[in-house]
Length: 382
Image (cartoon, rainbow, N blue to C red; front, side, top):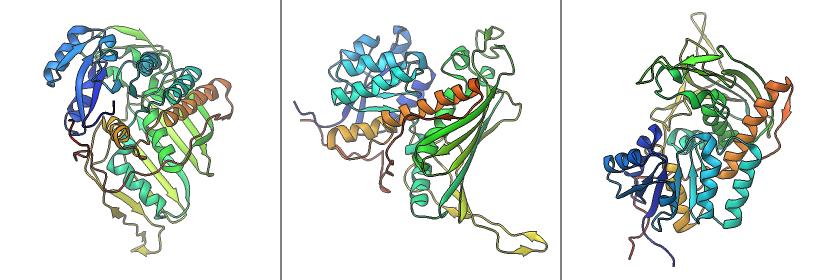
């Protein structure tokens, strides 16, 4: 039976990030959250009640729900592949929080399974679908900075243990600043400039244990399993080079350094953990001195399109399910390529050598300039 109207969504995972997804998905007219699932049934029921979702239960109940067409996988990274695989095998399309998984081979099998089942697989971050990044992509494609040459990115903090009540998983295998924050920066690089072909990296770890600083478990210590300060150099397919700092070992909080340099200018974009909400700055090469100083004022490029939020990736999938087209650009293939790059960065740290990236992705199109997540574009069910 061909379905029409809004696309039914079911969440698996009712932790902190589900608040943002539920808030945003409830504002997109083309989708409807019909169920929330979690291994903790009480937590799932509480989230469902808080956001007016009609049903709740465990993961199995979401997979068995005929009204669920897209499963939004918000489990911890170590469970991403297992839950996404179960959803695909149940005939559901899948939107997964980042990363796609923590094992390269398992994630590749997941991408292949989605193709075999003719189902859509999408992977966060969907911040790259926000107006800041789409405006930047169209500007770069239009040649505003000339030929792209390099990119510079940085994320610095003293770590999520200072605010998160259960931060252990963020310092375990498959997490750390590389797997937790890296997907935002690396995905933005891939969307804007193309696939990564080679990396070299140095990684260190300031502490062997950390202490939870907030919530009911404050004072509890836990082990740190992964590097918490990484310096990475990436080579991209079109010849560009990018330098990236990812750290949870610095007292200085500096989020969202993201700059793309070209032959005719530098585009300053801001934090890839956010969808937008501010203008882009374009710096042209210096052409004069004023009072003995370099005169350099940025040109302002206004963002195009309404500001969206987490869940917009599931929305682009929903519209693609109903209407076809190429709105679904935060794909499983892109998610796998980013995982491949992150795993290669880990290997580079261990081997102290350059590592070639095995995977690649085709050029990623920009969303239409008139893309509006808040528009009702799908017909009403009959």
